[in-house]
Image 1 (spheres, rainbow, N blue to C red):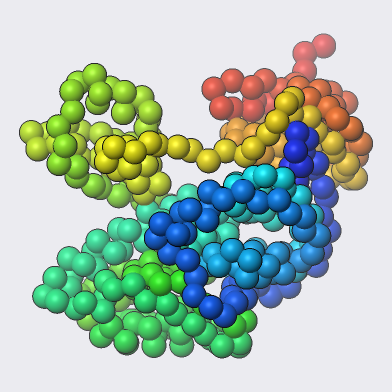
Image 2 (image 1 turned 135 degrees about the vertical axis):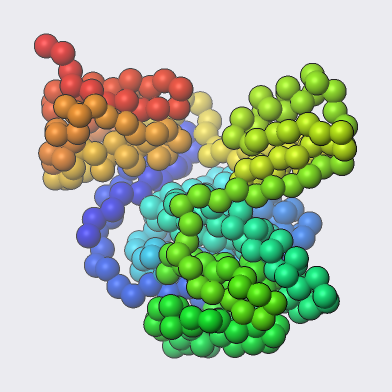
Amino acid sequence: MKRFAILAVRNYLVLILLLFLTSPITPAMAQSGEFLTGIQFETKLAAPVTSTWKQPLKDVVGSIETTFKICLFVDRRIDPDQLIELQVEDLSLEQTLRRLALTANAEISIIQHVVYLGPKTTCTLLATIAEIHHDNLRTATKAGNIMAVRSEPIQWERLTNPQTLLIHDAQRIGFRYSNQEAIPFDLWDAGELARLPFAHRTTILLAGFNKTFQITDQQRLTIINFPEEASLKRSFNKQLSPANISKIRSQFPTLKIQSTNSGLVVQGRWEEIHQLERLLAGGTSTTTKPATTGMQVYTLTVENQPIQAILQAIAQQEKLELIATDKAKAILAKQTSIEAKQLTLTQLLDKVTKSAGLTTHIENGKLSIDVREN
């Protein structure tokens, strides 16, 4: 199986074709020692990094965990043996991790103080789902099950079956699964998670199977499929002027924001709600973006690969949604070989599509593909 990854180095990006054999996927091998949490974790994510890696993903992850004391968990669907070639200079650790994920054909999600590296569809909802489960668990155990909401680390040895791991962890807080057989069999390498509440660590451990859980009652959990949609609701006891509410709606367009007599009720993904919470507390709201300097140019070398796969890799790097007309879709499956050096984005897209009779257009966050008119 062939995959694409994009490597960013200073003011240029290199699109590299990686060839590897599929192999069993395991969580990241954690290092001994306490992982950073809270403000120390956030401070470390903002710290600058200058480094070069050319080694398997699992070794890069182990190196980062050892050096920065940051807990990383690699989704079992991401190949840990794929070769990572990555160089960063004076880039924040968070940006470095996002660049690492992109190079591994993945994304990251930050669940409290664990960095999860996995497929985009999972990472988009993972933190939100974990928070929803935590809220539900807190409500279901309001009689006083402190263990259910207390943050604790979890460790496992090599060749651990995740079904056994999850069952024992649930039993520690007085829960059992009504359908434990729904947890697929697997064997994992040794690993650990930083301190997390039960709902968060269980969400992480199940996500690689495209599974999550729901609370049946005060003592039972049920394994369910990972949802395609999820929305978290939060209330903020803070009155704002209509002008400020309008600014917030403009800054957070994906959030549903309702003004009430007591403040604001918002609904959406955890990441946006967390940023809004910081803003309302008197801080600032920031979005992490890949660092670039000067004009961004690309170098690309591809042999006999589908045009769609190449365009998708470029769109992912540029945070664009790839869409194509029906006529263009019939052409995108064709394979092509390309060698380009130091091209702008426009020049690169033209290089990829022109020989196939296609044309591209970028507008409103979309990379549109159509058949070129004669």
